[in-house]
Length: 261
Image (cartoon, rainbow, N blue to C red; front, side, top):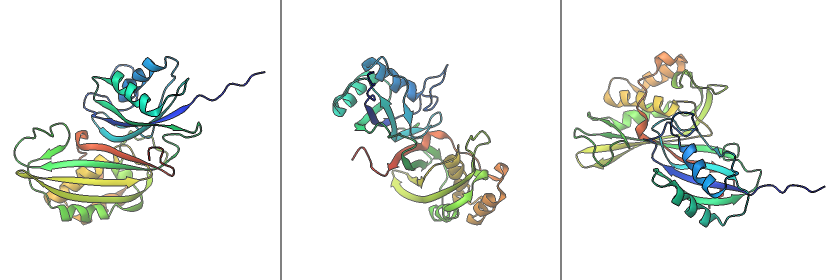
C-alpha cells in the first residue's frame, strides 16, 4: 500500500490595509482578508482547503506583520510564490511580504510565542489627509508622560476583564502584558502618539480598550491611578471608551525559530 506524502507547507508574512474588510476571518456575506488571500492561492492551487493565521484582526484593523500558513499540492520557490500571490491579490490592499517553506508541523497560531501590536493616535486640530483611515485623530493635546504612567499599571499578569469585549471568546481573562510603550513623535502642527504592546496573546478589543482608557488619562479626565482602579474592578463597565479600529496594526508575531529570517 502506498503512503501519501505530506503537502508542502508555507508561511506567509502579510501586510494589509483593513479598511475595506470585515476583518481577517472569512465571512459569508462580507469581504475578509482571509478570503482575499485564499482566492489568490486558489488561482495557483485549486485544491487549497483553507489557511490558518496567527491572529484574527477585527473590521478596519490593519496589519504590517500578520502571519498565515498554507498547504499546497506542489513545491514552490518561496520568492516565486510571493510574487505570484501579489499578482493575483491586485487590486486588494493586501501584500505578501515574504513566503517561507516550513515544517508540516509548524502552525502560524500554535507555534507563536508572542504578538506585537501598534496603535497610532494623532493629536492635531486640522483634519488628517495622508493618514486618514490609518490613525485615530483627537483634536486636543495629550499628556504622554501621564499615559505612560497609566500604561505601566497594566504591565504583568492580571485579570483583564475590564478591558475585554463582552463577546470575547477567550477561555480566561487572565493574561500577561510584557510591554506597553507610549512614544510621542512631532508631526506638522500636531503630535503622533504610538502605543507599542507585546504579549503572548490578547483578548478581544483589549488593545483598543487600553488606548481609549489612556486617552482619557492623557486628556486629564482620568489619573494614572484611575487605570488601576478600573483594572481591579474586573468589570467591563469600568473601562474607558473603546477607541476606533483604524489606528490599530498587528505589527508582528514572534516565533522561536522565525521562518522569515
